[in-house]
Image (cartoon, rainbow over all chains, first blue to last red; front, side):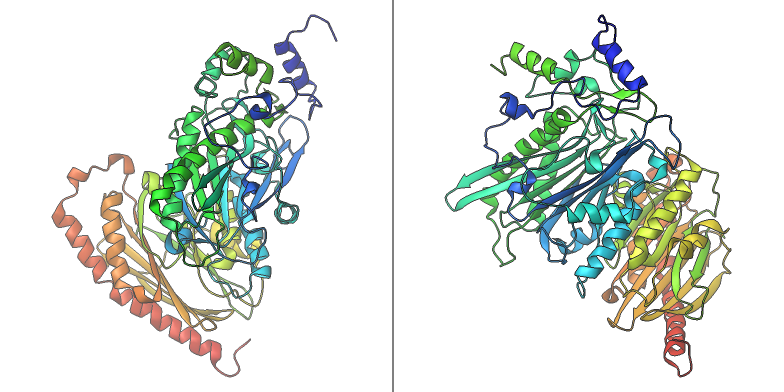
Length: 376
Length: 260
């Protein structure tokens, strides 16, 4: 390899060679911004800084990532998958209280009318690509039917974003991938970036995908955890803010994908606080404020959809509204960090058009943050 | 006639109901089209809700299936949308609007092929008033279509009775060529919902095939809207027709010697 290649040339060369996935991304080794020393917000995260910090919640990914351009519909390249979030770590149709909210409704989240009617969620939440919604819904319905016999209102919740990096029309997700995502779902750390339903997503014209975080709120009657997971496929480069710093503007010159930006984001919050459906819908709405902290403005082409659920036992106790504000704060901070974790942990992915969708260059981001006094 | 309806039952001795597709302006797989829509009632769940709530518009068919087939129907409708536009542009039929009726699943499983006629064959134009009675796995279904006024309103009601769960579900679709917006359509849907039997769990979708771009609320005269609302209110005959068809189907399903 010639010694005088600059980064842009390297990226182009990697794309041309169809190098995939790279062992070491052109954006450097991957790390969460918190691990690089950046603390976002005022509250502390839970043990794993993930939605799984809410006891009982499990997350599993089925990642379909193979093949190189050119695009051949039905063959690839395949850049898609499914992420399953199991509120109680199981599939028996047991209810969680839940609520939904919409920032811009150019998207799909199935089962929303049932949640609105009952205030309950009996299904895992599945994140996937636009073209897979029907397949994932059908597979989920059959899975739920097997393990939740006799339970009514078993409406699978499947939410989509347009995973433009791969062969969308090929609809590569199958029922077996839905079962795999459910089977491998676990508590503890959650893989982020180009995984599961986030495999083919682009955010702020960098590689996007799955990100997660959490916050712990302590009060007189004990501690509550709020965890957030997001599938990030939204925003234009110049919108990107990190801890309030216009990092995207400073990365204007950095190569980006050709695919049109400003698609969608799906955000899911879990909490162990005993909240009911209306309160959870209000909490869900606040996830949009966390997204806003990273710069996105809910474009008209965007499906910015939110859902929040509570794992607290349904014993009739409901959180006093007076305590909601601290949980809102937790949800906003966790969402901001979840979105940035998706960018920080994603690796370079070559899109179906042969263009590289680059990972966020963490060396440049940390340099910018240092210059602005946000990092030591 | 404005809309077309494709009504599919399984082509075997069980004759199970597979689904019903209402194409508000007929089947035009090559054309992009957009209409205005609103809904009322809680008797069913529906996909495509976020777009309908945000923009007050939809495209493609309204597909009614048993809850157990919603995913398959969604995928079928998505194929149709991809045929119209590979980027699923506005008006292509994305997001699919699929209404799942809360009935126990039939004894036999359906596959995508069973649903294909909903999206493949040109929809048959239904006569002004028709009743279809059929039975499915654990119950019976009645379907009625009504042409309410001269070229302005068509309504379809489907009543599903689940013998096992002893519940009935009613879904109505109202299509009009009057130039209405989401606000007026919500009133129209609520009016039609009142004509159904909400205690049994009803759900109504109301659609205007007028051009959503040309809609101007100032142009909707109160008199015209009130007239439409009254006509839809008179659609009680529709439910009676659907119910009668359902009773007929139940009788056939439970009579000795009928295929099981």
